[in-house]
Length: 159
Length: 378
Image 1 (cartoon, chains in turn purple, yellow):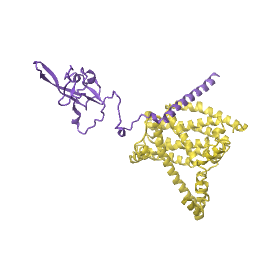
Image 2 (tube, chains in turn orange, brown):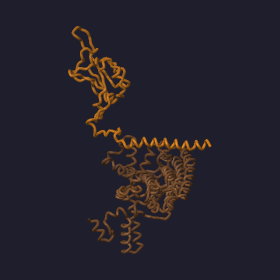
Image 3 (tube, helix red, strand yellow):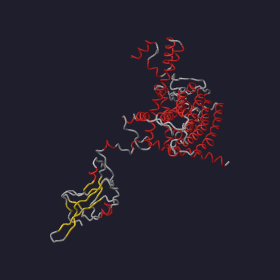
């Protein structure tokens, strides 16, 4: 007797759960407002990526064309596959002391793994990720970028 | 205006031309008499057969194209994404592009495979589909073959598609195909029982196997409302068995891509694969149209008792659109099945049929017969 009751209970529970599932999918079908697909090339003008998006490593410059990079080379040491190459030169200041400044901060976009270790470990917060993601070029030489702009200087007060 | 002038001149239709949409029998009788009067009976029948054949071919192709596109769109909307939307506005030409791609593919012949059976298998499923499509009443008067054992013919002929599946699996000379075909064959043959018994339930209520009479008997109310509980249970069982018959939905063990590469149609490429693919969708259409004919009233509009105004408005919509609407509703249900439920294992599939569906079906037939005897239906 018990097994018969069990049998019918199983059937009713089964059908109930199936109907609940179908209710959910039905609701999704009739709510086109929840569609998450973005029609990419058509919506380029107003496409905004999320805040933490890792598009490309850049060195932010302020209005006076100054950056925060001291040329210490910590980003080069931490980069897992040698994407960054820091070329620095020494500068002799007025009181005769030798100071190191950055000459060229070379970043190879083609090799970058976007792991963000350079951004995290920079002691002066000189590097950041930008939102730009359209990197395709026809000439591979264009992928080797120099991050500090020509004629730029170190910001005052950054160590 | 022009249409009415032409038809009055040719003597085909003797009423306002738009009445044709409500009753196609005047048009078909007119064409029949016109043909018989101008040529001998043999040629008249041959011309009619050719006309019906061409019409069905076009209908088959159109429905196939539309259903493939609809499945992709429905699946996409259920999964909160867009589906094909690039080719043509809203992606309506996607199926045409797929068809052109399939036509260009190379038909790879298989070594050590039985090539006659290999080439025959896709044609068997297509021919079976056509034979079943001929018996379905699309609207009043749009009924190609009206047997007095209509629904029995439908079940009998649709069972022949098992042969196509088994031949495909066997002649591919590949173990994946063979296992897939065996599983598919076992599944189809088991669920034939459930479909047959569910249909018998409705035949008991209707009192006849002739499809046009079953539809006529629903003039006062659809069967799902007339025979309440047993017919509703039969409807549910029919839909479940129907999706299992066509190897669709949660019962697609035989062609589960992740488990069996592609089951019985692994070794097919190009146009032969397109045949199997199309045949699956047309099978789904057939199951849905038979369900809407038997349970939801065929081409009968939705009438409620004595509400005269409401009934007149419902009558205004031509019966063909009622039929298509009901069929597409059932197709939507079947598609929901596929994209909501996880796939069943082969032993779960067979357990469902032999331990749950079959006993319930048998008891249901008993209840239905009792109800008809006591007259406890509407």
